[in-house]
Length: 178
Image 1 (cartoon, helix red, strand yellow):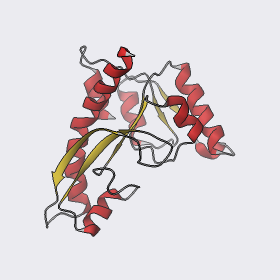
Image 2 (tube, helix red, strand yellow):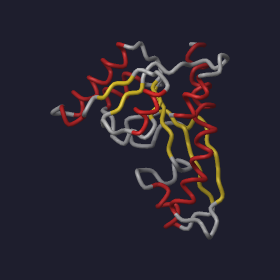
Image 3 (cartoon, helix red, strand yellow):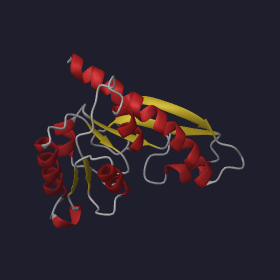
């Protein structure tokens, strides 16, 4: 999220951050958003009886601030097909692996356990299936024999900070052409 905010500070960048929305009051991005005068909202998923109700509340909040594209960053909940369909083509996520390899929440650990010699990150369009949407951009890192989850995650994070703004820019440019 920080990399996206920094990119959007450039007046030539085709996007602006209109809100940071979280489902947990202690989400790390909220304090950063406050420090940078970015509107925030917290919608606790535990306050809803279904995923669909929670997702409908998020959509309402996002539409209230006129969001056009959603960039997931550290949002660790599956989204309903209704939410994904509503935002289809305007909903992107970053994942710490070279998708389609190592889907899910423990991608870095899974790469280490599998003995992978390369890993990386993928910015992709979100689809109804977890970590299945089409890739927008990927960045590769070498996995050394000395790497553990922490060191590999740090390598991948450096690349995530580079490619997420590039992917957002590409999506914005595609969105404005349509």
